[in-house]
Image (cartoon, rainbow, N blue to C red; front, side, top):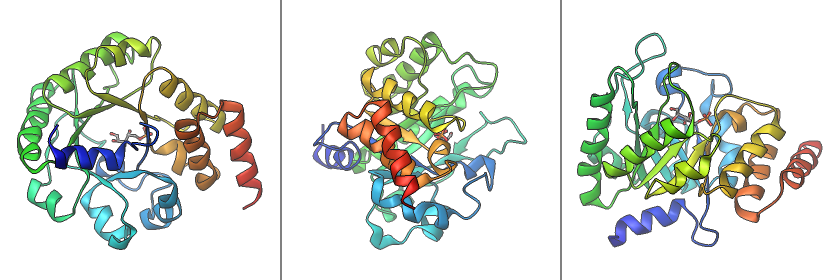
Length: 261
Ligand code: R5P
């Protein structure tokens, strides 16, 4: 792999553990001011010391993260839709020049396999790979799942494999039964999304299951920033991802950190 691309990837997936805790705060690009992200700066700032990277749009990056924080940025460059319309109808919203100007570690877009605009979203990914790779910028493909799709190993394997075949350097997907099959048939690294907010211990179990079944880490949003104590929660997630903590150990850590704040 080319040096610059490898260098950027190693800022995201930590060479010391081979794993990563990515903080996803890009939800506003189609959800608007979702719970917990009404004021992005207030939510993001205390979490930065515990995240290996942050996934967000250029608008929130510019307004809500100070450039001297030096956190690796995964820039969300697809969008153009809202929850009021067909979500799969995405286009690329941010140029590669802008990504370079913002000194990003990677760019990311969603694909909607089986969705109404499947072809358009896959073309977005392929074009993004063509545009980003010459500058050594890795591309993260997010396998979005429409309401009508089953989040099972068969469907997620299909989506992840297509993302990798089109040139994505790593893929973000959902955890599912037989998750090893998804990871085993995807030739690039896989991270998992946290999904809707669940009780903290369940979210920690999800992180544990994912990394013990082959994911290189998590790209978690709502289960961190909607937690009753986001700073305690991200530290508990880190313990699982980087320190091989059990779910019980991580949950104890969450409760200890929470009680001290
Ligand atoms: C969704 O398309 C966004 O990319 C989110 O970043 C993603 O869903 C991960 O966040 P969460 O853990 O809240 O599911």
